[in-house]
Length: 338
Ligand code: DAH
Image (cartoon, rainbow, N blue to C red; front, side):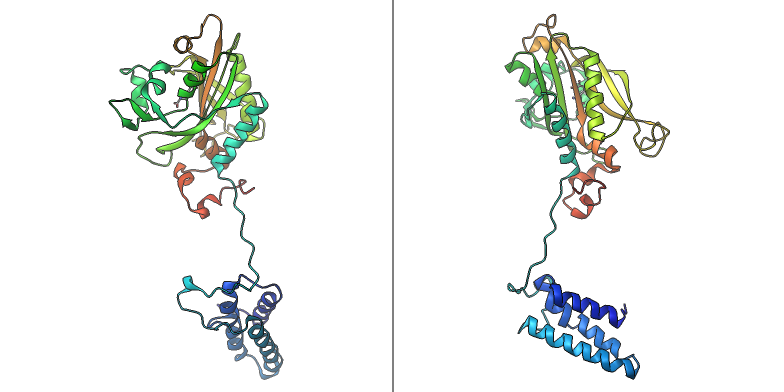
């Protein structure tokens, strides 16, 4: 790459005036392939008349650079990983980090629900089959158990890594009396063959409200308001009947695609809708399991996958991106660098 001698001079002046990260300064200015060497090289191809003045300018910069950098050896070890460190040279600014997209969405959810007077609980990632399944109305032979590919810790003892955040419904309800408003953000685990849309570790937020007179209307309003707050815009939802063992009735909720306004695009696979969460009215059997009287109190519950929301909001196409420690991957997510 040949740069004009003027560009090289400007760069040299900039470094001499402002300094650069110390470990690079010497090599950059005086090194074998440094800016001064390159400028001298360019000089050779200039006409005599221009050569004199520019040559003088370069000599002057070289003297200043040597003076500034003192006795630091000009040729630094070839191994660039072991660059010379000059503790007296002014340091460069370190880039500050930013939140992970999953953290941003969790914070947005927590912020919305705490304003609505929900308490935030986390629970433990190691659970028992009793809480993860039985008390949620998923008995051992129930086919729904097969849908949760479980990572068992000890199958005989019934210990496992929670496959969803729903067991916290049981844990919280069993220890407190209604009225209750709770959200549970947390990590969950599934025994999955990983691909672009399946990870064996991901995040969910469970939410539930139990009090006298709670209805599906409360559920619909709450989810609509929460999702508008997360996506930062007006949204349209579609509620479809579904099945979960721990809710009755159960609903699956779709969001009108926020990227094509429901017209059909690659994000919504041309359907105009994005499936985003499961919800329902807490099953009377589940209320009984925690000692509540379903004739007196009712509740709604929902569970949402955080990575799914982040993928939709930030147009991320591969769920595995969330798990990579590579900042080049994380940094490219648009709109999350605050
Ligand atoms: N626990 C469900 C899952 O992980 C999600 C879910 C569906 C949670 C409906 C709920 C609910 O609270 O009401 O697949």
